[in-house]
Length: 348
Ligand code: SF4
Image (tube, rainbow, N blue to C red; front, side):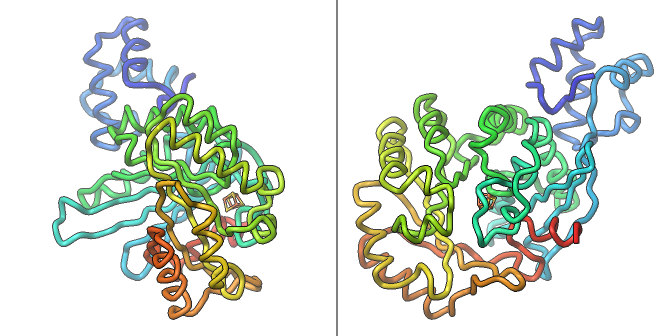
């Protein structure tokens, strides 16, 4: 049995033709899965009995089950707890950005790439549990299908993908890059709409650069000095800021693409005036944008969300130093928006 979500559309057709069925049967199957978002073979009404029997014994479609869906009050953030075949659980989140012009509505899917994570950032609920295992490409891709099935009720689809859920994508690099290319091809999402967000694994950044993959690169920076970053992003001890910045410059020289730096904003920790100055020095010469993300307070955590006035003072300081800085819209606060929180709750 092979999982359909680890195959390109061409590969699916080839397999079906090799098994002795006409190519149009393969196209019908793909239409059900990718256009109609139906993954139950029995519901695919135009497939004949023999072809359904072949599919049932050769091609797997469903491997993830949805255990729980939680929507925030505005219906803009929808969080899913998903059950994998081995009973592990992961989370994924849909963020809906509505525009006055409905054709510009954005539906961003935040995907998980691992069960747990070994980077252990202290502010992150996923990190607290350590790494359980890597996800396979088909388990990553299937999150897209589940999200699109959910969005069907709004006549909408995912049009933006971020590898920013549970896990460090470059610690599962091969499966993540395979999943990204399958999402691009099978769901027709352009590379510019796929973001790979890393805590700073230099080998991964260099591979994106060398392969000239056009995905958006986001780096979880969170602090402009090694002293603070060693604490907030422990992988910094292995890949310190000067090495990370060298890799970013290498990436930019190769790809000419702008880099996004994620900067979690924590009260009394990393939004001092000196931090803005250090940030400007660190990023000098790199074409980049900074996403300021006010931290989501986790229960009993030492990390507190800054006051609104402090958030905007820091943004202004950074802008005065010439940095492009925005505050990420606050979504999902009332449903434990930070990754790993829902999963931890279910396990407790
Ligand atoms: S923030 Fe990302 S890299 Fe850090 S522990 Fe959480 S999932 Fe891992």
